[in-house]
Length: 401
Image 1: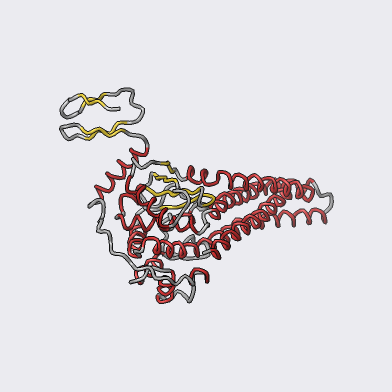
Image 2: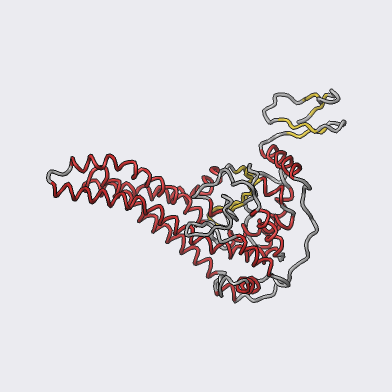
């Protein structure tokens, strides 16, 4: 496992270097567009300063920014005891030093992600839709997948990449909008046709860089993120000893009828599956490997849940010879597959799932639930300025705290 951890650390360093070069190049291009050749050094220095600030922000609070942008709300065990129990189980199974913080996103589409700097500062976020659509075994598979990301030390990379990629895209847009000023500045800074041609060439180069920089950044980000999903699947199976749990979860996630509303191009690779519902299409810009391939691998595993078994299943479905690092494949210890826990779908119908999703998010947002002896269940908002309420059915006065 240490080999993969070192690879992820190197990827994070590589990302910082590449993003620094892209930002500095874009800064120079913006300087060219606004002030000709004289403005390039100023733009590069300004971009270097932006990179330093972004790096500090990414390391200090990048995970908090991503959680906030996703609409994630931190919850305690009172809101969803089963979720907390499963996270604690996987924390113990993975030998994490600290239990990850738990967040819920108010979204009916099932999905989840992990973020943070390291195992000591990690968080797991799940959507309300995930909690109301999965059985316990399936939810455990998803949590194990996210905990595996934490164990492999690859949560820092997407945290850094999300902040950096968003900044590269933003600067490129600034660059594109500035081209109209660039044409005027090129005329202002050139006194002859030769100089004017040179300034025009600089401007053309700046526009090309503004177009290519975010594309290159996305290719780097997405290409590195796809392989890590296979490794996290393998780690999840080893932690739960039940491949069918994660397989069932991925099948239900792939059946989502809508995208995760708060997801964007920068945060999409963090999720366990593509949050935009494009599960089958694969291209250079795909954030995840095909979900059907991941399911086929998991369904093929039988009898053993170890890394070697996952590698053999990957090979047997025709995806290639190797997907796991050598240091992991050498861990050939047998991990016997356990039996299903027997906990089925928590809710039998779509209407019940929708109802329970709404109740869950009310709990997250601090609603008080009071049940009257007549059977009516009252859902009271947190800003209600009273400790008593009248039941709308039997008119009885109910007290609550």
